[in-house]
Length: 320
Image (tube, rainbow, N blue to C red; front, side, top):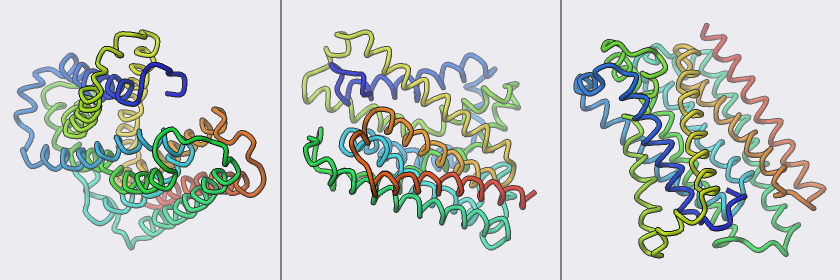
């Protein structure tokens, strides 16, 4: 995103989401899942509807997060999305059990459930310090011109996006059982069947992520920008591939962790995502010239995230 000069938000977002949420998952599903359409017809309509309702919430969150990357930076956006999204995405499957193997998840008040909740608490502590660090960074850099809107407005948008962002994980949690069963019964292997869950379950979110940038390009009459710079088009496409691979790996990891994987897998993925965003924020210069308390607060936030991931992993071991 930071390497692009001609592409605006709507251009790279459209190409990235088209690649990552439509082209790649549906291509794998149709090419490597035998009799894919017949298998899709066997999936209960309620499963598809539930997954896509969660996906629409995630789609809104995803668009807001893209805007927040421009407004308040990668590091702070990642911190807020991770903490708020993980708190809901980790807790809910312990209360309302997911589909397939996630139906056997421990209860919220079990030793494993309470340990996972402790990990969420540590993660939220890290988010709080990340937010404080972000405010301190802005005070330390008064000369920095915001790309769009105010810092406080971006912070509010990031909070809303964080609450809705768990929809991606929950679309998988409540959809993977019937969808993977249908695909595997038709002869699909594990990986293509996992792609199929995301292709079907995230379709509503994909539409949200495509309609909004299309609206912006229509309003600004800027469709022609998509053809002006093939290097930036390739970068946007790579963003989409990166998104799709990350989503599929998350789903596979959640299943590999067993019954508690819906909660623990999503929590660890969110913590890892925030660690990546903090690293990128530092490497790309978001913290250049900022020293003292804000930097120490962000380092403490990162330590909290690492500790939270370890605590949740221990909770998964207790579920054994």
